[in-house]
Length: 85
Image (cartoon, rainbow, N blue to C red; front, side, top):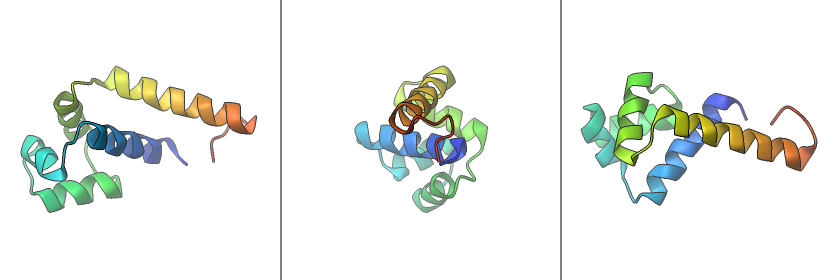
């Protein structure tokens, strides 16, 4: 899994853990629920929109990058490989 897919997966996991919906995301990024769901799931979401979602989650970019790093490290630990495919 590439880092962009990992980033999207972490955002989706954090949204679910916070009981937030794509309707909530749509409100903070100025789109409909359907457009927000598509942007997140397809990976076409803009960095400014990710920043708004992180604010909604009470996180910042450093938190998200740490989650990506931790997930990547965990995958390396499980596979014994540097890549995380």
